[in-house]
Length: 224
View 1 (cartoon, rainbow, N blue to C red):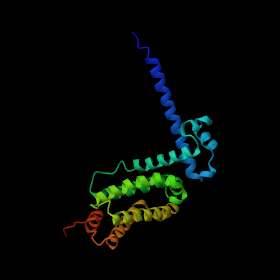
View 2: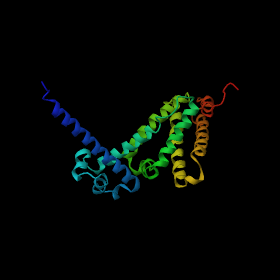
View 3: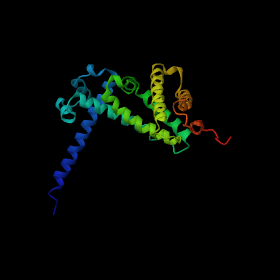
């Protein structure tokens, strides 16, 4: 005897798939629009037109423009995290250089988004910034572990945050004029920038030893 619940279940499944597709179209459209224009210059009508969906669906899924804006931020942070998925299982120096390469490649492919949203700074939008800041905390903790450093050490935290700020500023300048340096050149230079920041750590905490971390990052033989 046929299962009487099969057809309703199939319809529900198709409806859920359509809803997910519509929601994603709205997010994709919002990401593109907020990448190219300030928050105040992007209207709900612009987003729904770009997504080619009914006006009311944006409010149904996200509540208001602010809601979809923050969801666009989360999507951007997720996209950046996904860019690290291909990092090879190798030595720490190779992994960190691969992560820097993935980071710069992603931002160069999403230049407007990077300059306007990722590198905008805390002052631009504290709530949106928090989305990226949470992702940064995870990355900094992972990097500290790769380098054999205590991620909870106050000096390590200060050095890590300051290094990220320097990388952000350098990346913003590079995106303004990518023709000056290749990604490989930038990765090599950023590696040395990280080394320089690490070497400043003991000035904050004289008990902090960074020699092994520097050697690990540079891929040098610490026994020599």
